[in-house]
Image (cartoon, rainbow, N blue to C red; front, side, top):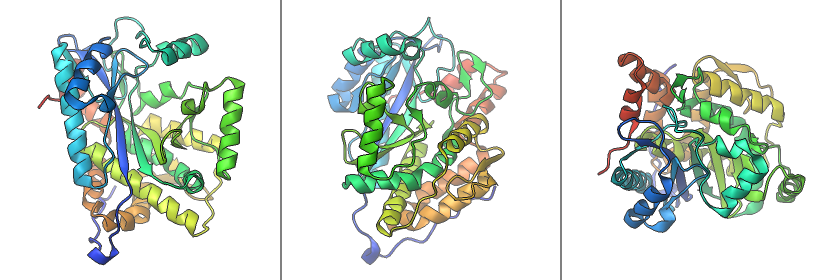
Amino acid sequence: MTPVPAGTPASPAEVTAPPTVGVEEEFVLAARHSRAAVHRAPAVVGAARVRLGAPHVTVEVSQAQVETVSAVCRTAEDLAAEIVRLRSGAAAAAAEYDCLLVPTGTAVLGRPGPPPVVDKARYRAFARRFGPLAHDQGVNACHVHVGVADREEAVRSINHVRGWMPLLLAVTGNSPFSDGTDTGYASWRSVVWGRWPVAGPPPYLHSAAHYERVVGHLVASGAAMDPAMVYWHVRPSPHLPTVEVRVADVLPDPAATTAYALLVRALVGCAVDAVRAGEPAPAVPDLLLRAACWQAARHGTHGTLPATHTHDCAPTSVGRLVEELWKRVEPHLSRYGDDRWVGDWLSEVQRQGPGSARQRRVADQHGGRLQAVVDELAVEPR
């Protein structure tokens, strides 16, 4: 695959205020000595909130998880600094309880039994309704919110974004190992998460009213407890004026997270422009999108994927799809000076593969010793 070139910066006259962007990152808590997942989230989250502020750290379904929530940002520099701040503070809090904060989509090594559900009313309700699905989680994603104030535009823009979900998953897969074994997948997290009845690619949405009807039917059916539990890869946020892209594994380092979030912002910006221009989005069948996401989860950046951002969906190499994505988003990236951040990261992914490839290289270098993978990924407190 050929490296992606950086574009030329836009002139000051062309630059307007960039859309807001925010990032939520989920992490595994691993015991410092064994490197296995450990159930200490309530204590670690409490300590992290003292360091970072209560709105910026939260528990997730599993007691082996911690989630950070960034401030609303506009510039790449602010976003990068915020991601470093949150990771460092959460890692320092984990260290207080003899834990490592590990940015990987699944627990690399084993767990001391199924992870107990965090003691919150919502998560207890999950466990009652969905049984083992709620207990067999502990998987970690990266969610990116992009500000889109108009709800109708937000919903319609998703039709232009949904076809890119398989490629975004391919370049962010970071969960090849789970419970001490190589799953053979680039993103085992997405396979585990896909068991939920309301996870996966969204349907083609004709309007905000159509979205509300679909979500209402899902809630009425019992497949979702409420609108916040519609876990599509991309959705209008149920509580914020944003488009939320949820397809990626948590990424291995702050630079990758920053670049990925900026790429998502540019992709959503292109979609909003297309909606305003009246451009039709390709009505890719839901089942084909789901199959393409499985291929991306299985093979990462190797092989081909259906070109689900087009009407014909022809099989295309991942490298070629990256080039097509770059052509689409580069004007938006250049407008805000984000092209170098994203171009450098995509070029590295093309050369070295996504996080899953990095994890496997570390394991190979250490004779298959997966403790070394955890050590390589663990965030250093600063």
